[in-house]
Image (cartoon, rainbow, N blue to C red; front, side, top):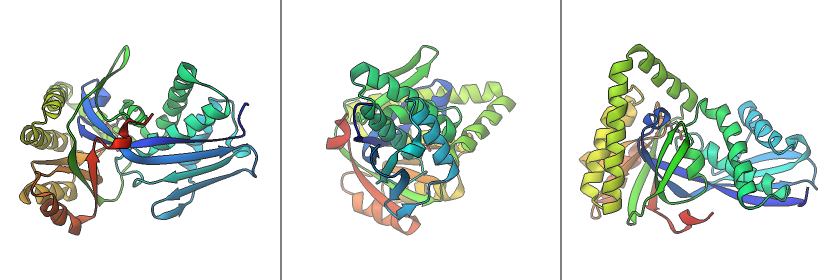
Length: 312
Ligand code: PMV
């Protein structure tokens, strides 16, 4: 051990195209959020584990403890011997990548405690975050983990040879995220898609190909700053997600409320079954779309890519 204490950050993420299909090796597009998680670790104080959220302190539940155990064991550290302070400044468990952000913050801090640097640090952090994410996600695609590094917009595709990451240079724009329903379990939603695919392999594989085509076209439209096209593709993506059974009446209603108020596009973001939608307003109707969504839940404005999105 070379440091007594360490602090590190992990970023949340917004998936714009391709959640779920990314689990089946199709392209997805996401952007890191400026917000996320800060973790402070110390070997000096009395051992404890505190989790502070935007809504106050949160009890560290069994799943978080299990994820932390797995994460720290990859560094040969025992969390019961550490003072762990975690501060989360994005909503938890609603598809904004809080679990990967938390794991990344803790893993980077743990790597720091161990004095790891450069490529050795990145490899150790990746391994630790994967171990932790398996607890929350079952079979994570790795997109949240990649976004947690804080790298702006990117296209992502995992295949047999590991993830392919392509940074996207996207003009800055305002995006609205509305949290309109309680969180659902990502692992459960991913499993429900797997069941559907097992039952209708040819049909769902065909749908997954369409998801991939939408995300590939979406990456291009984003890089071109062709916002009307981005919006249309988001709406198509939402239709596909609905076909996979991961949308809900509440999420659909929120998408229509945003579109009726003039949004160019709206879709659920994350695992679905609850949680958040993302809407892309036009430059002159940001307030209208925001106001249309406000009765349905908390609305967050993100100017993406944010300045701090490129922090590493
Ligand atoms: O856990 P969430 O809600 O941020 O969603 C993760 C995205 C999925 O594609 C549904 C799962 C994955 O591992 O990529």
